[in-house]
Length: 420
Image (cartoon, rainbow, N blue to C red; front, side):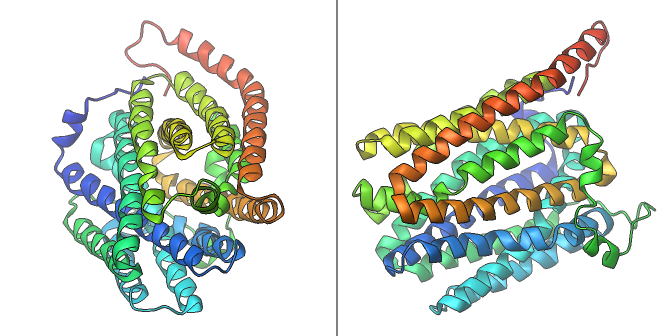
């Protein structure tokens, strides 16, 4: 059983004190940018589809770069990769602050997400070395809890800044957070490099063409493989609400731009609770169970949000969604990282991110189509019902795997460690 270290033990690690705050602040900045872009498009009164295009632009690089990003994360020096990628993101975000042309906005957002395609698998594969394999579960829960606070806080700040000062100031805030993350990448002492460690890797060109190479590592695990597909299916049926969320709050519930951002605070409160739940799940069986329960609760939260008679009720369901989303992400992340071979973690994370983004692109098309035809409220309800159905079906299919896991854990009783 993976040790669940108290947060104070993690904070004693020098690189944790550098990376975790920097990534949390950067996530806050990303949330500022995401909300500002949505509000910018909504204020332009150009309809739902430009919002769908923007969300698609944010997803596309993570899909196109599955192979090469995973190859780079598992092969090249982590400090070099992170420093170059975050510095490029800083420059692109700075340029975004000084443009108003819609095409240029799309291109610069695309460039920022190209950097994201490389940084996410590199950071994720590096951190188990920073904290140690026995503290992966605790670290993922800690990081998820901070993300649950940082993302909604950034959304609130973004809405407030947009309402008070416009787009430029808000985007410059995100630029500063990218610069901070670049500094953190340079200061981290722990490094990971396949070349340095003598690990044989395929060529970059081969990694680029074999975009699904990372799935081979995931497929070896009978637990992670079905969980990944259940996660993707949930995203496909529910991700489209992101297209109409701004219209639900601003138009259907008659809420101001500033309150639209501040409404995310409810998700932060729920997210903190979700991270606590995830941190207390020490056995992989409980982590898997919480993941599937989280899928269903997110669906129920979307149904409630779509049927909300006023903004206050919407906030309550936002809290539920935040709790479930953070808990399922933290537990699934712990299972994925803990059960994937160390040498393949970069590829596995890149492949998962790419698959998730493919699901999101499909969801955006579905959400945009349904939203255009029926409006925000029915879109939320339809997505929520579909998500609950997927969760129930996936849980039934996973029950056999859970039974096998419980049997394995029973065989380990009396030993110092259980199945991870």
